[in-house]
Image (cartoon, rainbow, N blue to C red; front, side, top):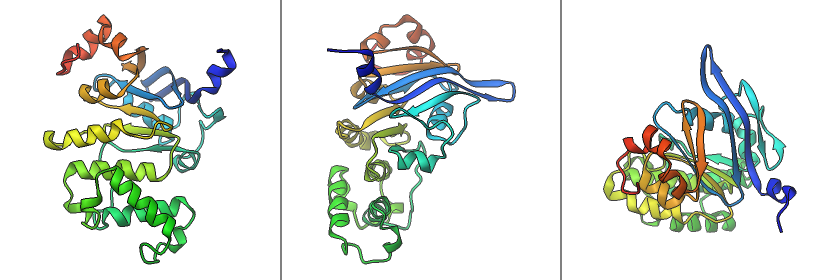
Length: 260
């Protein structure tokens, strides 16, 4: 049995009429988007469509000119990024932002400790806290990083660096995860491992994927929103999007693919 209340309760992240203007340029125009619990939702569109601006609005890097953002029913429109992260919204970035001198184990230990309120004890020997050590081991295995756990991040293959970045995000135990082009720059030989890992993300984490790679988009997403010129062109299932003539004209026709 469904009702309006059920539908509203099912939405974990909601953007309502988001507008962002830079001077006379409207980068985001009346964007409305709902991310549902457990979603595998992709945001796609050509370069300059406004995808990065929208993600920056959702995560608090930018403040909207107009509109509202709700996280689990609470208005977060004017909250800072770290405040949104504490409430369960975590983002990965298109460009790696990692500590090159730390190992994956050290990086995850710091992240898990900080998330659990143990940040002041970062200097303790790794493994001193059994729960932290156990969680790190789980993440290292889940993200295929066990074999490189003690290597400095700077020497890791780029695909492993991307995996580490997503592992860091999961270490924060998000309810909403925004994946910003996770396979960007990853060599072909390292992509399959990354694709499999993204596909295996926990079902209780609602994921918004921003991506140009159509192999990843169509294998991952169950819902897709197409952004063009800062506005939502259409939204639907992958099948609906792949057969939409307008989407083919403005975007999919420009992308190498086998799906359409």
